[in-house]
Image (tube, rainbow, N blue to C red; front, side):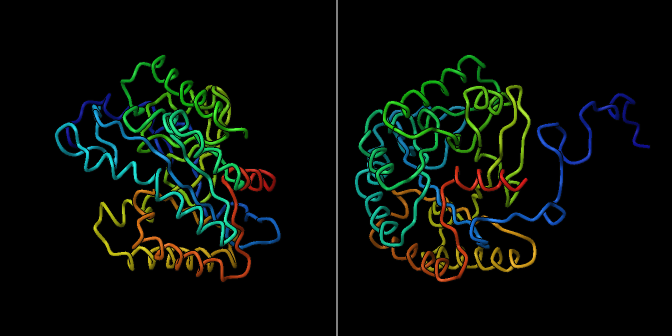
Length: 308
């Protein structure tokens, strides 16, 4: 033996799967196959993030993707982020209007307070509004006092509900950051699904102190920011990543039940004139296949729950 003390082997949370009881561990191929409306094979779910990065970001306990990089005032990066809400989002609107796609907009509370017309423009198109935290400098992390985190969530929802007419059912944390209490607090606030966990291709139920909530698949690997900015890949690489990702899900759905093609976009990244066509190519490829259901996160959640 290694000589480890006996109490080392008595870890109270060791169990099959992950060391917590938030959900029942399972593998996707053994689950009940999902059927989408009209027997669609793949549900296309696009989330467009409308974010505000304060120019005087503290960056605590870490800098989120897209944070300011240089000494104050970092106008180079601040104005590029602002470009997304002023210019880039309107290119996405035009593209999606033409393709007949309704998306989910993940909106910072600060964006809803500063630019309520953006929230209204989304809703006029039938888009869903998802809560995306207070702003990109108010992260959720272990060590954040619970009352402070609860207040951040309440502030976010209050800002969104003043600007939006429809219900707010989903949550995406800034930088997908969470504390041990985040799931409990967003369920307590009445939210029904969360986009922060990236360990599955399909929804699954999670437990919280305030009742059940659903984890929705929201992968980072095919996100525009991670491919084009963080990983420095080309626009053609982005198109190929989306189409390859979709093609495999399409094949799996033929024998294993419905799948979800979840794409996360940022208008300051993909809304650039030289990039928007790469997204269009990928979407036209996806929509050319029979049985693709373009829907919001809430619609996909309802369809999934109906089949459980």
